[in-house]
Image 1 (spheres, helix red, strand yellow):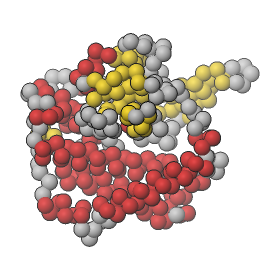
Image 2: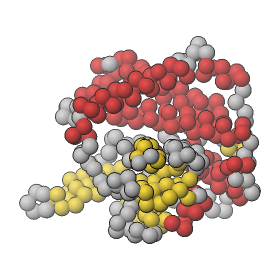
Image 3: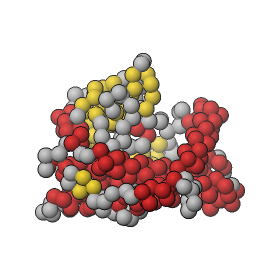
Image 4: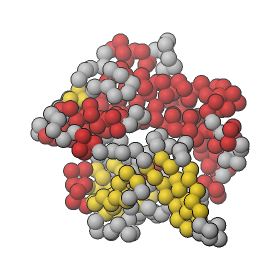
Length: 318
C-alpha cells in the first residue's frame, strides 16, 4: 500500500515550509517534495501604489531578510528616476551596504546559533527534544550568549539606519532617508553598551574556525548528505569577488563550470525564465539556453559563497 509521510513544519529554515515523502507499496521512496507554503503575490500587491512605496511594501515578504527586498526595490525605483547604482552618492551607497551587511550578519547568526547549532553540537542522531536552542543555552551558555549578542548587533545596525530592526524606512529614490550620526557610529565602536565591532569580528572568526573543524571531522557525511546537482547564481564585483549589494550576475553548474559570464542585473530577463510548480509558491529560475529540464538555479546564502577555481572567482554553493 502506498503511503505519504508529511514533515510539517520544517524547523531548520527561516520561513515556512513542509516536506512530503511518497512511498511505493514496498515502502521505498517514490518521490519527495519541498513545499514553500508562503504566498508571495507582492508583484500584484504593489500594482496601483505610488512607485516610491515599493521598498516599504515588498520588504514585508520577510521578517528576517526584509533589507534585501527593501534594497532590491529601492534599486529598481532609483532607475525609474534615472539613477543607476554608480550614480548614488558615496554616503548613500555606504549606508545601504552597511544596513544590508547588518542584516546578513544577524541572519547568519540566527541560522547558525538558533537553527543549525543544535544539530552540530548534539549530532543529528540526538533525541529530538534535545536538538533546540534552549538545550544549547543550557549546555553551552557562552556560545548561546554570543549568538544572541551577534544577532542583536546586526539588528541594531539596521535600526540605527532604518529606524526599526524590522521593516524600517531607509532607502528613497536616489538616496537614503536619514544619515548615520557620529553618536550612532560610536555606539557600535566603543563597546560600552554592547560588544563592539572588533569583538564581533573575533567571535565570527571563532565560529568560522569551528565550522571548518566540524567539516573536516565530518567531511564524508557533509559532502554527500542531501546533495542536489543544480546550477548556482549570484553576484560578483568587477574582480570576480562575492558581492551582496550591487554587481554582475554569474551562473555556474553543479561542478563549478561557468554557464553564464558576468552580465548586468538589468539583463536578467534576457537570459532567464522562471518555472512554477503546483506544489510550491517558490519560483524555479533557469537559463533559457540550457532549458528547464537541465538547469535550475539556486540562489541565496549558500550560492554567495565564493571559491577560487582555475585562477578566477566563481559563485559556488556551500
